[in-house]
Every structure is written in structure tokens, then in C-alpha cells.
Length: 153
Image (cartoon, rainbow, N blue to C red; front, side):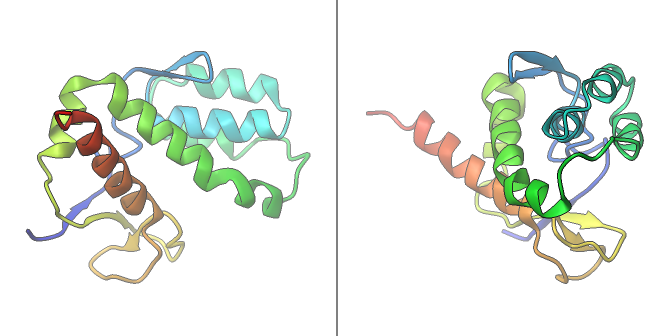
């Protein structure tokens, strides 16, 4: 199966896809909301976290995150961000039967997030394989875990 490249709120694989789910005993409108909220909370910026959680769009949540008051170093956040995203992606697909079925329908395809910038931590640069594609890897891991959960005993 060919690679599935995705980005933006139109793709159910994207963190910008609007879908309510719960994580950390809170309700979020998208994984992007939850991820940026987590970043604010990690830094102790509860005021900014509340604004991020209430943003009307995932893009809005991301934009609000640029004003987080930093009490931790970038290295400290980088040490936990992958596990944070793992928790959020899993929550999204566990809690939505429809999204879980769509993810499983990707079968064995490589899932690749297209990113327009040089920052290739979460995806690969649009039209290339330059980048780490960590979001794609997390989605493929989640898909495999979902498969295991759905297998008959």
C-alpha cells in the first residue's frame, strides 16, 4: 500500500482535525488543543492553558501557545513531548469508534505528516522524506495497538 501523506484539519490523521476527546481529566476539541495545553501546564502557565483549551480552532490553540510563559527549558519539554503526544493520539483513537475504524482502514500504509517548514520532528517536509515523521510513527504504533485490541482471543 502506498504511503498516506496528510496535514491540516481536513485529515482525520492530523492533530488539527477537530474531534472531541478527553485526556488528563479534561475535554479537548483536538489533539492540537490538548498538546498545546499540556505544554502550557508543563510550564505552569495555567492562564494560557485555559485560553488554549477554549480556542475555537486547532490553529488558534497553536497560535496561543506562542505566548506561553516558559519556566522550563526547551530541552526539558523535548524530553517529554513525544510521550505526551503518544498519550493524546491514543486517547483520540480509543475514544472515537469512527476514527479508530478509519485508522485501521489505512492497513499497512506508511503514514507521513506533510510539514511545510524545515522543522521535521513531527513530520516530513512536503513532497519529500526529509524529517523524522514522529507523528506518523506514533499513528502507525497506535494503529498496531488498535489491531491488537480488536483481535479475537
